[in-house]
Length: 354
Image (spheres, rainbow, N blue to C red):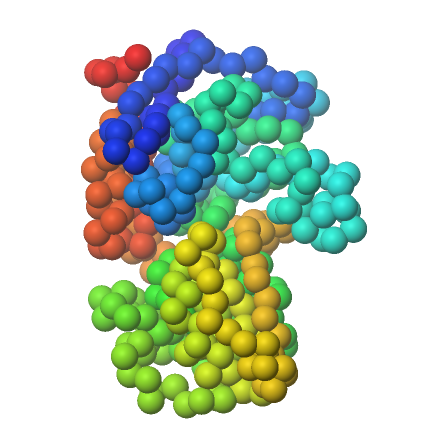
């Protein structure tokens, strides 16, 4: 491998990506250097690039990826070298209360989240929009079977693993669940819920084009303007994955008394809820927020894809790969909504690199 690695740098909402070479890093205890094979653009990165979500800059964005281990630091089993892997989007310390007592390692007191830390932090190779990145100690690594393509696996270490965490929080499978949002989380939810015993999975979205894929993943599509299509007090569970607080009132109205509301999409400041305590109390509702996931959920995601590889059109959700040198074009395509995920691959270009 060349002694340097290349990364796309995001500096500001109004600035184009720049490209920077980094020296090949020296690895610390438990760390791994991974060559990125393919990465996909998550909605949270779109929020960052468009100014809806703020974070430290300059930064290497990106956290959904598949890669191959090219080197390991002391303390990490050398057998990981040359393994094709994916990994948790966070690391965790393993000793704090969230890690040990609360069963929430994704809320570790010393959490490090890939694609959300400045290039001044550690090696700087903290995101997937690069030829390589450094995985820190405490990151859970998962071997990827050869039977699964890069396009199938890359979104699993964010959207699919998160949806598995959402469904794990639900009560015993019942008659009817309503998913608000036909994005990637919603489609994953259809497949997961049907496989776990839910009889009817309804997916609501305001965009007809997004609903077209829902039947292919086991769900019943309903346009959000068709309010009478879902009767009040008829759903055992409602799952919000739209990112819009405006849908909460509908979700509450659809829930039966004693129903369960899982909220997973409102991960941004513009998410105030128009909700009274009386509503929750009189309907005896459970309201649960889910953010990110634990290592076991990523293990389950890869196992689920392996088991149901041929049951659903997974690869139809991901665009043909766009070169890293055209990352801005990839973001434009992602913003168009044509694909559930836009994929990017390193292309080894030289022009414009600092």
